[in-house]
Image (tube, rainbow over all chains, first blue to last red; front, side, top):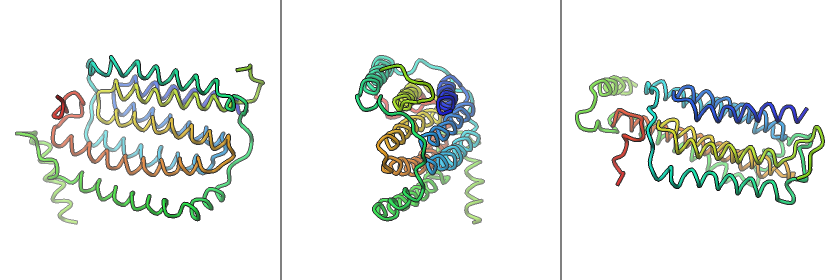
Length: 188
Length: 107
């Protein structure tokens, strides 16, 4: 059962990741990233991390990817044009990726303690997680909430119209849009 | 590695999957030409790392790895919000999402 689930959802995961690279339209890439994240949630459940599986679906596949698709649609992002890319990326980047993957695969396959164990049954209870989080790690947890608050404020102030000045004689359509949203935010 | 008995998923497969996901994220970061898709590749890399955290937490019977993943998710949420706001701001200033055209700081 574990093996079948792993093979199916690892296959979904890899297919989604490859599809993300192959698609040229950002919406298709976002949807395949959702497939990757949802199948990763199943893999987390297989590893006994039930809370993280739920959080993966809610936070990643839900909130973050909705934000992504929203921005793709808001900016009306079209098909990307394929260009050559930078020469440094081709000369250094791709060999570096191959080397990184080879080193990691070698370490994973030949490390002594890793090959020995396999997936057991049993789920890490959420109580255990929250007991650790709310006693010993209470300060980092609260700092994270402050971080989220600052991120919200930063996102609002960055995305507010009138922040990024149009470069040169920029498009009239974008400025008209920002005019409209200025009035809307002013109304609130 | 010895051949594995049926119904047993070795944890190294999960780690291999996470390494492959991370590498695909790096490749996407290098080949994609759209600002939003480049950002999505970064999310893919974060997810690959998260999978290896959960795998190690499972192997060592500890909950610390999962707590790490929890914090990574929180920071990724904050990062996505701020990053997409920056992308909107860049789009408003330059009217394009192609990374080749956003080259003001290029030498």
